[in-house]
Image (cartoon, rainbow, N blue to C red):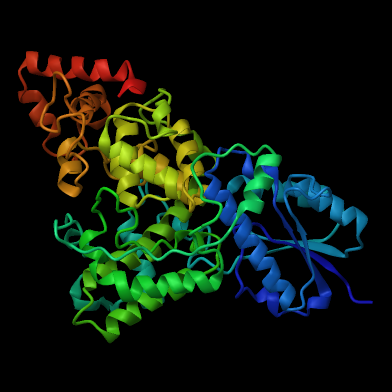
Length: 512
């Protein structure tokens, strides 16, 4: 009789190319679980929960078509113990297995849970890599051994060389590693933006199931038209659409924002990548191939900028996560402690930029990186919101948010709560930047040009108040530039008026 192994697959481990699936299907059974422990650890966007469950169900069906036996426990299955450990214990108790196996989780809490379960169970076990990322968990720590800060650019260049991406021998193509300065343009008024590629599924059954199980969610959903790609084939279609229709303009306008335009020139394949339906190397190679075939029409700056987000930033953030967790989740460099304003959950604020970004997030479970960094994140940092609050919001509201990538971007890049490990300076701005990169200020209740007085844009006084409040921590930072010389030149009354205006806003964040 052949030995049998129980192989556990988590909801973000849907890698059809994994070497596990080359083994004799008669030697193992796969366990996949929809559990309340995963839906309830933060308030998730309803579209995020639906996307995960759809992707998992489609993946399980794919495995079954290959002749692989799958034990799939839906959320409303009477056998479901509603967390991974209890379900694994129960399956191993009622069925005969010689050993069990799991793929390395990408979240610290699940890694810890499965390690503890492995130590508890009196049964042999195996742990395998997910075969997805282009670096190992510990590679970044080794690369920056002995360093106090981790410079992404150094790691990115190492990865470019390792995988021979956009290289000409040992040198970068056209002599430059980074074209970031060319990728910061605002949208021209007459630009014609392609309609976003979407899909359509009826998901009422899952929505009803969530309601019956009393899963508390945020955001909005149309149960008759779920638009996100949840299979490998659909994500490959999204990648093709991006490479052929959007890439040419992605670089120029990747930081731009426009009322009513929620997708712009962005690929929107991050969910598919983060649950491993598609892999980073195939995405990178697809985009590089498009450039090499049509370099006259496809700007290198766009290609390099996109590849840097995946080969550089994505791998880098995962490395930071495994180098610094679990302590990273407690960092609060500024000691911020305020609660998120209530309108972060409703979008009902008179600040049009935040209304646009938050309502878009509630409608689509999506916002691009500048909306996250320089609108919602910018405000949260200027307002002194507790990083725990900000983490929970970002982790819940975005379809692509899994802790390894969310917390490093939020607590590090966005909130500077790590004191500069990830970002070399706080990413904050007044209304000027928002107005430059968007049309959000047009028609806003607040006046982008006013720093104090009735209807003065809150970003203006909060910006100067932030730097004044944290002078002891930031004044010596060489990346900040003009801020403290400008503050020092201000007349005492002018500075006091700014601080007073900021104080009024901070005293009633819910009323903004």
